[in-house]
Image 1 (cartoon, rainbow, N blue to C red):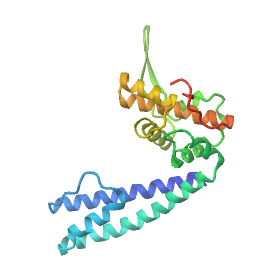
Image 2 (cartoon, rainbow, N blue to C red):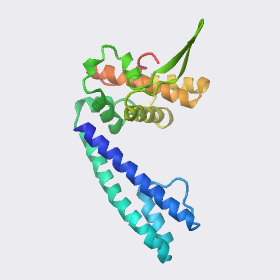
Image 3 (cartoon, rainbow, N blue to C red):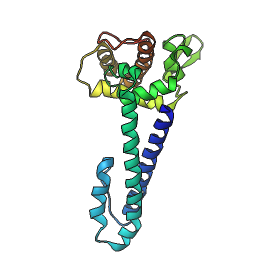
Image 4 (cartoon, rainbow, N blue to C red):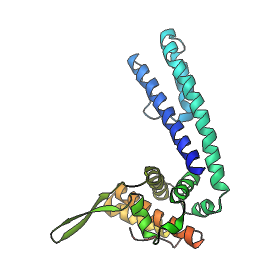
Length: 223
């Protein structure tokens, strides 16, 4: 049920973005350029005043805006349902005690893992979802490379977003944030965020199995 809800939610958001890009393309043909970043909820209100005085442009764009508005409202409804489902789930609520982990990340992770006991060790969860670095072996050298990007892309994306929020937006102090910030100073932001995402995968699974909530001194498993 949760996976179907999340999948439909994702599809509706993608279609909403696709239609917004179609509108951008049409406006560009007529010499109208929109700001690079426009919030989904503000898109319609921004575009309609721009086209209402041009009958030809309005006839071309308004059907796209109307279709996009319906899709976006349906997306918002599914987004509310997904967040409500997470708020009513004991496991998701415990996962959400981790800084940066919101209802969508918690529900996505729980739905993808399904049965936590299928992973004998929490440290294997990150590799399962493509967050473990590839290893390149040559002679005496064994060097970690970029992440493998195997497994469920949605889990990887939500954990990356959660890790980025933990490092860049959360105010609460924790060992995992301190560890990530130190890594950011030495390895750069992108590598630090992926490393924290790996930690989160391990940590969320361990909390699920142990039935525990997040403690500020927790860092997680090996990255």
